[in-house]
Each structure stands twice: as C-alpha cells, then as structure tokens.
Amino acid sequence: MYWENLVFDAVSPRQQGRHWEELLGSETRTDNEGGFETRIALPEGQYLDICFPTVTDPQPESQRVFPVLASTADGEKTTVDYQSATRGEYAEATGRTYFVLGQPSESSRPLELIAVEMLSADPERDAIFWAKLTGYQAAEQSSTVLRHPAGLGPMIVLVPEKQPKTSAKSSVHLDLRLEAGDDAEQILAMVLDTGATKLQHAWGEVPWQVFLDPSGNEFCILPAPRH
Image 1 (cartoon, helix red, strand yellow):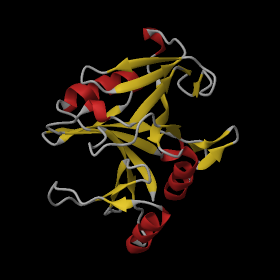
Image 2 (cartoon, helix red, strand yellow):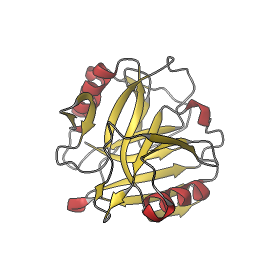
Image 3 (tube, one colour):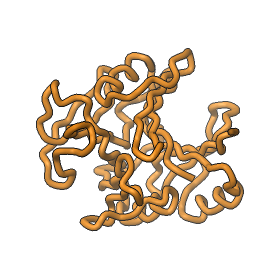
Image 4 (cartoon, rainbow, N blue to C red):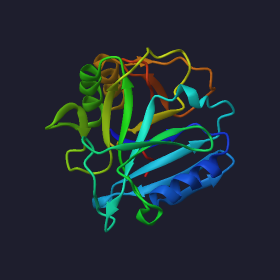
C-alpha cells in the first residue's frame, strides 16, 4: 500500500486544478465532469496525483491537511530548509490554505510540494500510525516528520491541532492505494488494528473504503490497479 493522491474537494475542479498546475508544473491526467487530476512526476518512475473531485459543499474552513511548497534549484532540490525557513500563508480563490517557504518570486516557479501538514490531537501517536500505513520513516530531527524511505515526494508532517476535529469533513485528505498482490482483507484489518475507524458515509456506492485516523482525519484506501 502506498500514498497515491492528495485530494481537494472542489466546486470548480478545473479552476482549482489549473491553479495548482501553475504552482507545481504538474501534468493534467483527467479533466471531466467528475473532476480534475494533475500528476507530479517523481524520480524512479514514482508520482503523486493531486485530485479535485467535484463536491457541491467542500467547506474550506474544515481543512485539516495543508500543502507546504518551496522553491527549487534546477527543478531538483529545494533551496530552503523545511524546519527553519520562514513561511508565507496563502489561500486559493476557493479558500484552501497552503504555505510557501522562503520568499519565492514568480520566476522561481514551478514550486515543489515538499510536505503536507496534518492536524493531530497527538502528533507522536499519529506519526506512528501514518508510518505504519505508508512505510514512511521518521526524520532524524523530528519523530513527527515522516519521509519516504528513498526520499521521494513530499513529507507527511503531524502538527498539533488548536481545537479538536469536528464532524465536518476535511476539505483536503490523503488517498492510499493497495498494490497488486496485497492481501486487501489483511491490510484493512491492520489499518483498524493500528487505530483507524471505518467511516460509515452516505456517499453511495464507491470503489474505495473511507477511514478516520486516530485524530479523526479522513483518508481513503483505493483498490489495487487492474493492470
């Protein structure tokens, strides 16, 4: 199982998706009535998809997952340090918040998605939870900063919440994908044993399963690819 998607609920998927493509230099994968999807290409043939499904009431104020961007040098390596850099707070036209490290200019685009910060009632606990699900490892400088074992793609960072999660769905969440050969029943049992709760939603029949992490953050587990 691996982290495949960063998902933004969107009233205007194309508008929101194009905004992120301009920021990140990513490539359109899907653009239809159901939503918009753009892909960040990573080394070694890996990728992360940024998805914008059509949602009639996305509630941007309920956001609990926040992208963190930084400028790059030669399109390969960030020029600022995540832990120590100053950051600016920005908002899309649709109200979603994101952070940019340092002081990049228009000429420094595309930016790199270096992390997603997730609000947590107990960052140490939730870092263990997300490490178990994704295979990411704690960074040397902080046990609540998780990195891909090969350093590919953005980090997952657990940050203390200022107030507990409400019943409102976060307008940004993560999707995980089962791999071919995974034992789905075994993995889903592991997810529950690790501290997740299965969400009983009213969204009709969908091919994925929806869970809450120990702090109530929604995430989906998608079936393995057919090919």
